[in-house]
Length: 193
Image (cartoon, rainbow, N blue to C red; front, side):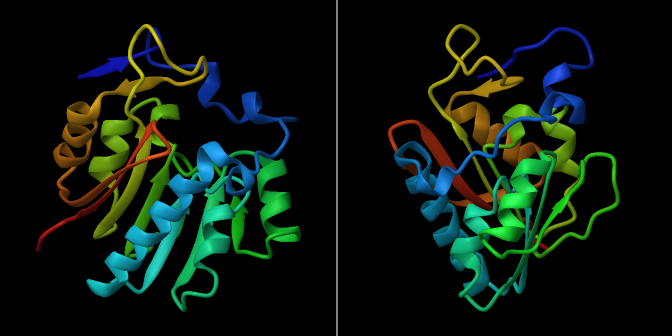
């Protein structure tokens, strides 16, 4: 199942104004997120084994996943809507991270599009997945949230089957799925040609 957690066609929690002044979140150093980021990096490496050469991290946060990929030899960059995250990614993690709203601005896509803990913050996650030009998707989201119990700023929640449906309706075939940290589903999907 899936649950839309906001009324109407917009939410303040998806605007650049809402993210202004918020402090960077260092998920790579947090036990509740570290395992998810390492799992996502391992799935990117599976995609590389299937021919991927470039990676874009949509909603890259402070660049933790980009840092994990830095020495893999794959070209990787990311985008985030929170300036404090971008500043930390560039100045501390020394990764290619750019400030932008990837829903409205022109961006450069890679063979792999990463959306870890991102789709639940989107106004229309179905459209985002459908319109991705990337051959591969690595995505994650909590699998234990619902319309009653969820992070207060999430706009969507999915159970395991609901998340699979979100990815497959976008034209991706799920080739690998991991459950980590007791709450996160991390998957790799591919568009067959």
